[in-house]
Image (cartoon, rainbow, N blue to C red; front, side):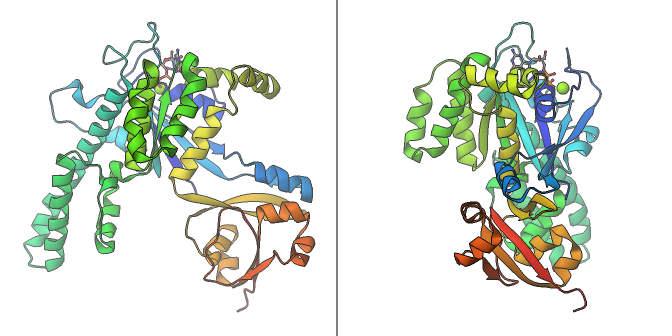
Length: 393
Ligand SMILES: Nc1nc2c(ncn2[C@@H]2O[C@H](COP(=O)(O)OP(=O)(O)O)[C@@H](O)[C@H]2O)c(=O)[nH]1
Ligand SMILES: [Mg+2]
């Protein structure tokens, strides 16, 4: 399962720096935006300490982490840059249409030597602008589909009329400033909407690219906004000044939309990636930062995709596997091998915490913590599973 997160943002917002931080790669950061669409692509491990802990118990030959693919695409211009009602170029779209989620990078760092395409730094404005561009592109997609559907509706087939009504409704909502992800659809409608691959329907996460000076405060502030009672959010935002105000506004927006916002210093992170891990850790600590922002982005990206991790553990391999939240045991088994899904009999499941505390599967069984689950069992994040199957069935 190749899950892809597309990194988008205005020119000079720090997309390529973030990509480099995420991947440890060294794609050239642009001195200035070019007209051509250029994409960087990399597969990144999802950090998961559970795999490390289980490896200490099982001493496997191999450890395998779950992965997410990141794509960094240059070429997203501002919606307000021109008067023309223009969405995104077809070439650019080709790269992000198929992404499973979008990481939207907004710049809040000030640096006179890095020109901002709008002439000034205002992260909340840029985010509005970016979302408007995505919405505009979706409107064009919906309108193109409406043309086709109107023609088909002339045949008198009622299903096209139903589709046309749905598309009109979506068109009106988008025009009123709503994002597709904020609309509710019946399941038969959802099938039509899914075919459109609307950009504002994709899971999103917001990445505030902040100055090094506010980095230590920005993370906890976003955390606080995400956790606060809804009525306290405006006061929390008002209480901030300077760059932290923009960070707070992005946090409030993410919260309203049910998405996640993280703060990073893309430049600092990209530099850290070039240091030996021990030196990087020491440097992070001296800045009062617990974890690499890149790791937070990877984990938030993973969460925004509505994915969970289950684990398998043995002497051959300790491994983290990815499934959509809500998947049943046979679907999870199918990630390992289609035969295991086809011949699924039962899953033996123990909670990761219980397995670590018990020290072995046998000890967990003795404690009554190893459960036998059938085909309707919904796999949970942190389940350590062993599947019994029979392919001759
Ligand atoms: N001061 C500072 N500069 C940054 C930061 N992130 C990116 N830059 C610089 O901004 C410029 C553009 O960054 P880049 O990653 O190429 O932006 P992109 O156009 O969105 O891909 C580069 O010179 C970066 O070094 C940051 O967090 N702080
Ligand atoms: Mg770039």
